Length: 109
Length: 119
Image 1 (cartoon, one colour):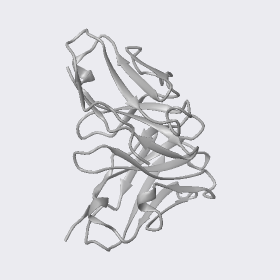
Image 2 (cartoon, helix red, strand yellow):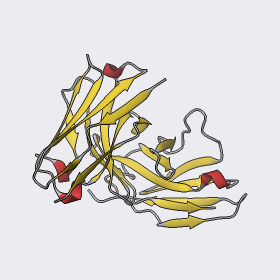
Image 3 (cartoon, rainbow over the protein chains, first blue to last red):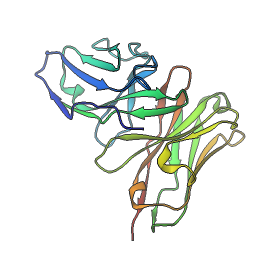
Image 4 (cartoon, chains in turn brown, yellow):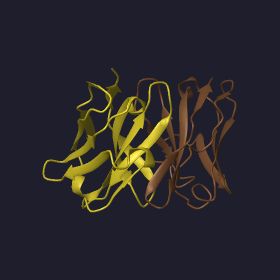
């Protein structure tokens, strides 16, 4: 199972919006609505910020939003803040029981 | 407070074995699927294995099949990963994570334990 494809880096200025893409196949992203996004700060464990394509867990800012079209999922961060500087990973179910993560995107503010 | 605490990481030679543990607290451990996810130094996340709430279903990424075994002890609220025939490429921080299988997400993670495979 190959990793989902994400851009290596994305940057933006404070207050701007950025979008991170996550390209999969018809066997993973295109076949399931179980797409999640994780934020990871250096030396810390990942934290889920989006699940089931577009749902936000409690306490996650509404500046984070997710969507999907075909085999591509996207994470948008609006009103970019310094604290958003981190690595971001998408993930998807594959084969109903297994998971695959994206290659990861470093966001620079 | 929900907590997951991994232990057992160490330096081991290629071909060696290691058993990781994850101690859970703050939730009904026996009601959840659990997963192991790893991250090589400076690299991305890789899902390794998961186990259902009953311990009857176990799934693995292809690269560890036949070498790693996931298990759980609900009485002890513990998750395990037995790793045999370790390779240099298994060097990673290993995280245990609580899984919402029906939603396809990992909502709580431990702090990770480092496994280094080297001569």
